[in-house]
Image 1 (cartoon, helix red, strand yellow):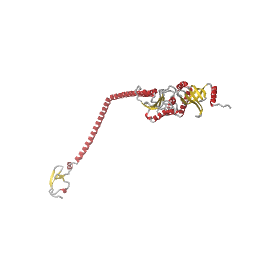
Image 2 (cartoon, rainbow, N blue to C red):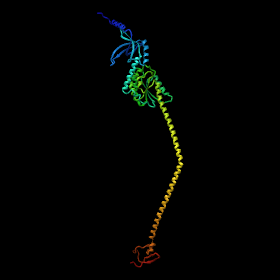
Image 3 (tube, helix red, strand yellow):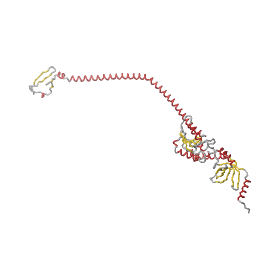
Image 4 (tube, one colour):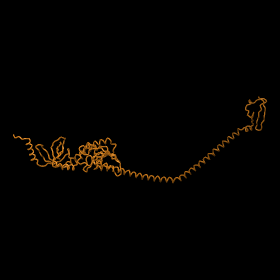
Length: 412
C-alpha cells in the first residue's frame, strides 16, 4: 500500500483543485473576522448561516491582497455607503486556492456593490416593516413641531465640523432669533454608533421638558460609517421618542432607517439649522400678520366708536331741550297738582275751623248767660259748690246784662 506524507497529500489536493477549479467564481457570503495587517493585505472569513436559524453551514478563509484591497475597499464603501466590515453580505469574485501549509482559501479579485446595496435595502425594509407592524413607525412624524423650537438638544460628536456649522448657522441667523443648544456627545461613526446615540437619547429623555426638539447631526465623516444608523433598536427608540427628532447626518444617498422614522430629515447639519430658523421665521411672520390685523382692527374699532361718539354728541342738544321741556311740563303739572292739593287742604281746614269756631261760640259764657243762666264768682273764681261759701263772704253774681254784689248772711 502506497503511503503519502501530509505535504504530498496537500500538494495533490492543491493540484486537483487547480485543475478542477481553474476559473474565477462569483460567491455570495457574509463577511466575518475582517482584519488588515501592516502590509495592507486584508484577511477575513467568509461564512454562510442556516436560513432557518443562526448556525454556520459553511466557512472559508479569504484573502484580499493589498494591491486589490487598496482599490476594492473605497470603491465598495463609496458605492454602498457601508463600511467594509464584518456582518455584511457581499458578492465577491474569487479564485480557489489551496496551500500545503495554510490550507483552503479564497482570494478575492472583485466585488459587486449592488448585491450588498440590495441586501442593505432588504434589511431596511424588514426593519421598517417590523416597526410598522408594531404601530410605531410614524409616531415621531406625527408629533407637532413647536411654533418656536428654540431649546434644542443636539446629539453629535463635539469635534465634528458639522456640529460647529450647525451652531454657527443658528447663532448668526439673519433675524437674530435666540436659540439655546445643549450638546449630548455621541459617536457618529464606528460600531458603537447605536449604543452611543441611544445613551444620549436616554439622557435627553430624563430632561425632556427642558427641550423643544432633538437634532441628530453628523458631518465630515465617511459615508461608509452610516450603517450605525440602520439598526432596529435605534430606529425604534427614535420613532417612539416624545420630542420631534431632526436628522442631518450628511449624505445624499437613500435615507437610512433613522431618517425614515425621524420627524424631519434634512441632508446636512447646516440644513437642520436652516429648518429650525425657518420654523421660527414662519411663526414670526404669522405674528407680524396677526399684529397687523390687530392694528387694523383697533383702528377700525376706534373709528367706529368715534363715529358713534360724534353721533351721540350731536344728539345731546336736542336731548337736553327735550329733557328740559319734559321737566318743565312735569314741574307745571306738579305745581298745578300741588296748588290744587293745597287749596283743597286749606278749604278743608277752613271748614274745620268754622266748625270749631261755631262750637266755641255755642260753648261761650255769654251764650249761656243769654239763655238765663248766671255765674257766681268769689275772689274772681267761679263758685261751683255752696259749701265753699261762708257767712259774710262777699260774692259777685253776673247776669247776661249786669252784675250784683252780695254778702252771705245765712246758709241753708
